Image 1 (tube, rainbow over the protein chains, first blue to last red):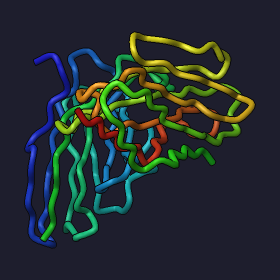
Image 2 (tube, rainbow over the protein chains, first blue to last red):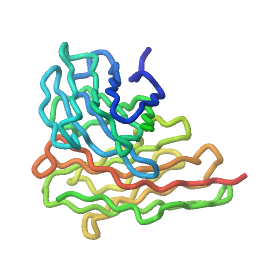
Image 3 (cartoon, rainbow over the protein chains, first blue to last red):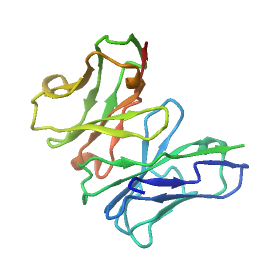
Length: 116
Length: 116
């Protein structure tokens, strides 16, 4: 497909479980971003990759959150020992440009995570 | 710190009315970019426009227009002759590398309802 894809679209986890969320960016896009969007709020930055390098992870809320992009294309956001406050929509976006991220970002449909 | 404020949480209009969505931002950067994104019910954010801090010219694209005023730190968005398909959440966003690094800061969004 031409756009950013994310899987799964919906994930229900029991508190304490680990989850892995996948993002397939647009082919050739150098920059990849992860955001967390709580209900009724705007997206909040989590982390940024330029190719396979994670250049900014300052938005990750705790050390339970981990992201990787080992080959500079597909990215995975992993959350260990999920907690109820992790419930949100996790958005992935990609951009053709190198940093700074001044160009438009193309967003995926998001993964809605519900932690029970 | 960088901040984006969208004071209007929800706006409801009748089709064909004009509507303006407000955005006020804060940044210490001298070079920065402002964006508007649309998030329809499907969930994917869609890029609408980008403006850099040195270009205060207003822009018009079809029924959409944007008014950027550095003096008041505002970047307002007007939809002329609104249509039902314009119903969505609209986000204003800010990127400034000097203080924000790779982050894009989003406002909380304005939900627009256009009634037939």
